[in-house]
Image (cartoon, rainbow, N blue to C red; front, side):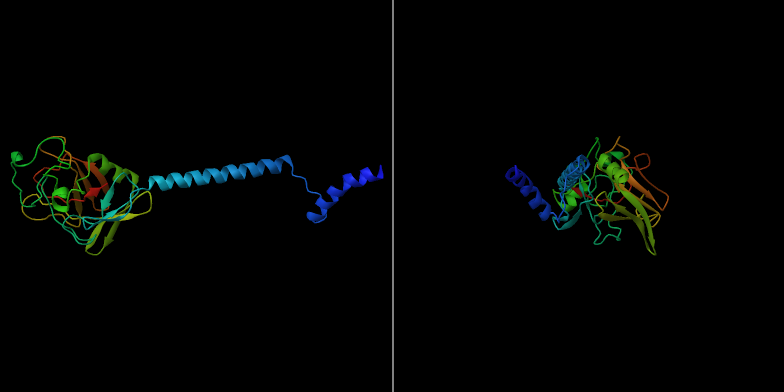
Length: 234
């Protein structure tokens, strides 16, 4: 019996020595907590991988122009077409006129139909190359609804800093518009064309009003008005 008792006690004593003289037992609660920690780590890794997969549009240069990934469905140009830095106004273009010189009030002088995106009348594609285009109405609404908008008034430069879901940002200056032959309301309003229209008289645009509001609308955006263009790319 003595020999049997020694054989039974010997492994227990060895384990006690290895644990600092105490025999450790894992309770059911400890095992459950350990399992929960493992599950949480697995979930965190899964969420991180999903986030990395969603952020698949790299920031970089396309045809020599900066494309900024805001965490949306498309990348947005860093500057207006015709501008060399974000705070510069750039050109004003009537709807479907890449020359920036057509401001007649004759509706027949402008392209009809529901969209000019990716056509020869697409000002962004014509001026910056086939990899760029005008945004759709849906993409303007996505920019408005999924980003945070901060009004910026720094002396002569007024506009909105737009920060996307991933933390990247771009700047939209209040570049005014051109109803006839001269720029008006710069510093107070900004108008940015989409490539889609509800009829032959108007087209959808992003409208920025001082520090008051941001909207996507078509009611007052006559096709013959000169407005800003901010291009997008995939």
